[in-house]
Length: 83
Image (cartoon, rainbow, N blue to C red; front, side):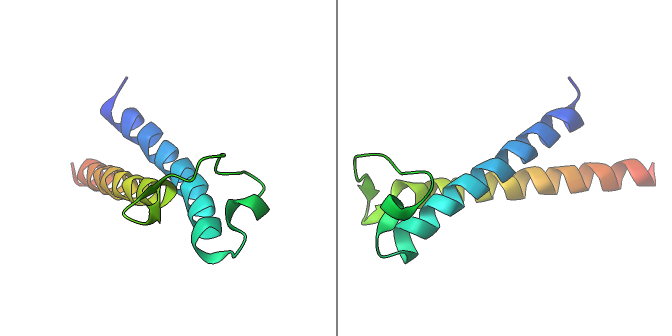
C-alpha cells in the first residue's frame, strides 16, 4: 500500500472520528440532558477526566490526527505537482 493511500485512509477515519466525538461532546457539554437526549448514547458510566467527558479528549485527539494527516496529504500533493 502506498504512503498516499495510507494517509488518505487515516484522514478519512479522522473525519469520521471528529464527527462522532464532536457529536457526543456537543451533547455532553451544551445540552442540559446530556447524552440521554442524543441519538447515540455515551454509555451507562459517566467517565470524566479532569471534569471533562472522555469524548472531548477524543475529539481533540482526532483533531490532531486530522491536522497532521491533512498537512501530510497537502504537502505530498503539492510536492508531486512541482516534480
